[in-house]
Length: 274
Image (cartoon, rainbow, N blue to C red; front, side):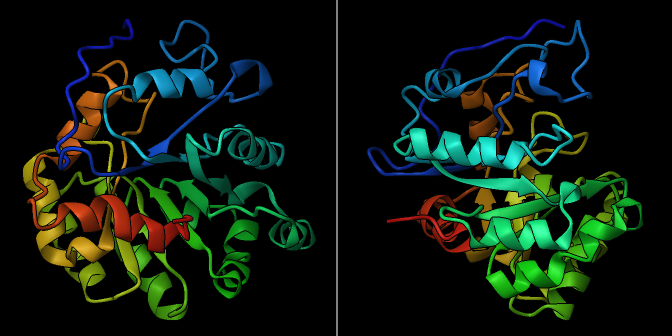
């Protein structure tokens, strides 16, 4: 499947106002990323200038880079360096919790310009590495976000983690990956009842049930102060451009909700400057 970049209409935001894209990736397959196979449309380097070009004309204030399963602890310092060298483009970064032991993770958190959050992923919570799960209390103590990329029960897991660690902000990627909608709606209600769960309106181009109607259900359940938006670029490219993805993610957002979802909530969740 060829990568396509369609037109770049302005994203569904107020004219001239700022917004944050809270989910994008940069990578170079030569550095790792074993899931990116030769022949894949993603099998090439995506760097800061590609990110800038993909956001041209969209009014994006800054991007939160999210780890892309490079598979070693070198990815997080790479994201940090990208942030340092491109502060006008990259507002923050989320590292990979899978690749750290406790001592190394404490060192990471104590360094200048630490991550804005850490991500853990897998089929479900039980399939994630036990050593990574053991680091969640340290993340809570540091006041950084825990990001969940789970294929099943992401919303329920987020609610359980948020109850256990009330000072922890738990961010659920890609609407919680809805598949069984009845089950997803029940778990959305569980997540909505816990105030430190945040849901990311992202992946709508690539999710089976990633529709504006599903995004609207999330917004109605948890509110604009607990939602952020992400393009999932360049993952989205076989289905559409960064503009297409952001437009789909913001289609259900009302004018009264926009500034909170696109600006103030990202600043709070990821402790972004400004």
